[in-house]
Length: 234
Image (cartoon, rainbow, N blue to C red; front, top):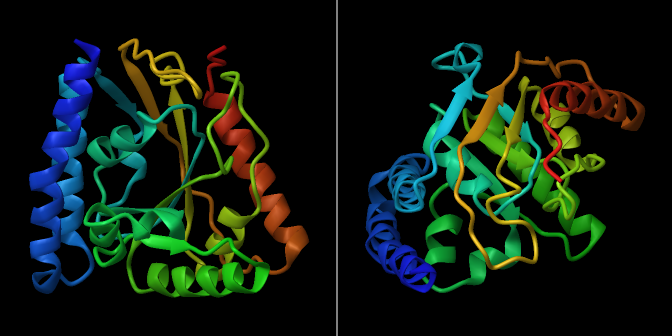
């Protein structure tokens, strides 16, 4: 049964990916790509019987854009945030993913933001381009730990997400995802469906933040909020 569901997820990705590719010439900022990604994400959650309970939706103001900074415990975090957050969010992802045929192309040309980590200079250029896109009205979501937790505990945050937020001047919304680690821990192939809790906390301003020390202080503030809402999942 598990293999069949994985195959269904992969098969369902085909029409949504081609829908996103066909929509590229007709969208301004990735709206169709996000619509296809949301439909696929909802399909994945329904298929596995995973319900998401969101708290704090009132902290998202319509017609505004944000930098969402989230913890990361499972591959199921991605469909969770795409399907549930009521905003036109774009994920920040590794540039290598955009090289995957069809699916990666849909991400690359569909408004998602890729970061080139091959060298510090390239990474900085990627951050500057991403900041400009955010200033133009795009909301983005970054997994602030940089990678999935291995033990269900909250990891140290990486500075990159907060340098990006500071460069853009757009407020940060702290996001906490609880219970997803038990569904699919890193390194596991066994999926154990259960409900997920998604908490959106109040915005933290980033205007006037300049320099490494200020960015690190911003990082500490956001992590403290996520930690307050976090339920250890080991």
